[in-house]
Image (cartoon, rainbow, N blue to C red; front, side):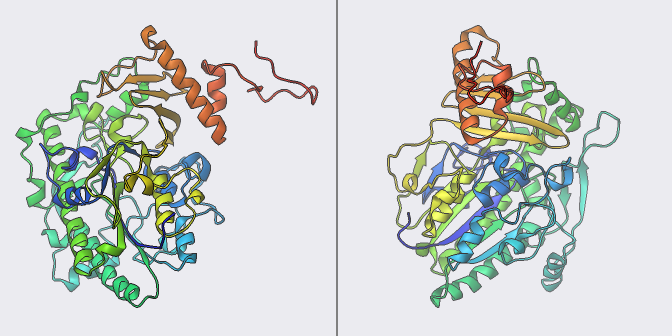
Length: 502
């Protein structure tokens, strides 16, 4: 546990691919602010979201619990009957920090439920609801007016064509505003204003602070001013190798999602432009993060403030002939950025342990001098950030519950292989060493039978130990090994009945 409470600056983006960061992809992109943060702290190469959908992932960060446990399973905008707000008795790190004397601020995206906003969980800051930049919000409009900046206006819309012939979702457009008028610049400015206020409060000795900035981007649609919209040359963009996806041997829902996101109705040069614009979006946000980090340094808070950078989940941007996210547990949307800098701890580390958002929760508690075990599905990252060689999990699990419609999935991956269980059709097994783009589903391949069984048994055991009832399906439909219980829950004849597998 941390010796004394620290200030915490938590920077988060939405739908952010790791290959848009220079520290992960230095030959193709440049993100000076985040690259510098990684160089001065610890870069986690294998950071993952517990679920690739905004609201459940953000609820997991807030509670330190996996989605099946906190039960906030879907985004409000596409909710299909799941619970829409966290129970009032649910543990949150914000309540724990507030009780410990922290001042709490959150600038930007909330998206953790329908009726309760960030203020209900103790955070100061404008209430900015929804999944995309709320460019009609009164505080943003006031910011534009106060600074003599032009209003939001877009042109050159990029859309595909839906299966029913209607125009597809907006994917990108040119924004006719200077950078200073963008919603991203507005969020960074409000964060900087709050940093000045919190610094004064901290220096008086009154209380430490937790301050979060949650950018709405680089989530699509990519709406950027000219200098970022045209920052990368589409002719120099290589399409991801997984555009060779045929969906052969894959769950049919993936082909349906490809049609929903209209990939095949777009010309190749348009797909290249979308990747270029997406990278420009990440670069623009990097510039705003740089402004925030510069302010932290100018205020003399670097030596007393831990800094996090991560995202709720990734983005396809054409990978597997898909956009956005959805019911496909590929690395593109489950792997996320993960950078942590703690004053006094080693700089320039690169760690390969499997870590996730609930580990961020445990680490926030640890930095505040609180028990990290309150994040029941996380573990504090501080030993790793300190450079220690400590026992750590050997595999990663993730879950999905649906978006547009209920769709349960569970995934486990180790250093080389990934197993995805899809009850509606086909399970998936990928060899990430020989097939890093996850194009070949080898679930039925006899040469991987031992791997399939090992991962199936391990996933079953993990889910059963956690109390994730998905394990009941697996015990009936897969080789989960010898059972010491009746998975049908039907043993009621005598109290002494012991389940004996056939």
